[in-house]
Image (cartoon, rainbow, N blue to C red):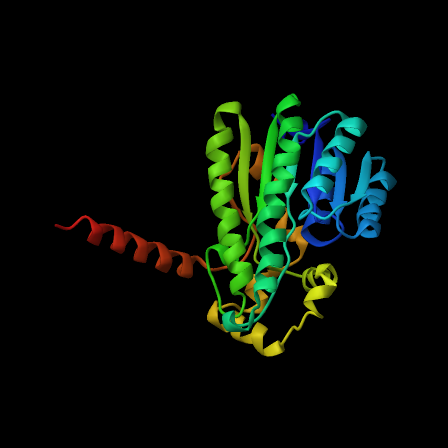
Length: 281
């Protein structure tokens, strides 16, 4: 079956759809003939994304939602059911960034990152899963983790911790939904040319104070992960170039871009050595 036919007439719901990777996802789904629901904490940007889809003849609606708010996500699911009657692809794609050495992060910094990045995914899936189960056709859930789930770096401990948790959640979700033939995929993007830092700062609760982004933190983080901008940073459009094919194949992992094979091999070789030592008498 042609990939376009595989998704045509379905309904895609994307969180973080106001810009960056989320907007690029929406555009790919709309181009495949899907109706789309663009969700974002920035309602104006979500509506801008939906308007772009409608401008090319597609069907789209937008809503302002905070994924950390379970009730808001449940409301978005109800609105989607009323407008489209289905959800065949769900992309839990929201994440906020918090730079800083571990001993500089406050308990409230940690709570904010985990509430959005981890519980936000949980709220998104829990809210839409009943509608997905009722929907016919091919059904998929894609959860955006991060290359940081495979290659951690210094000065981004809260973000990395949250994305490790997201990866573990997604792996378990894939196992639990397999018998229902609902595909689940972990998407692991590397750095992108997006508004991620800007949108994270805008979403940060005022009670936490203004976000502080130190150039030193970014430089040290990139060095610790052996990253270079040319090889590790791409546009969102490049990152989603294989999205439809990968979801149709129900790939377990999608690494969108970035060259870090050596680091991954070093990590898993160390795990395998530890495993083998554990088998010794």
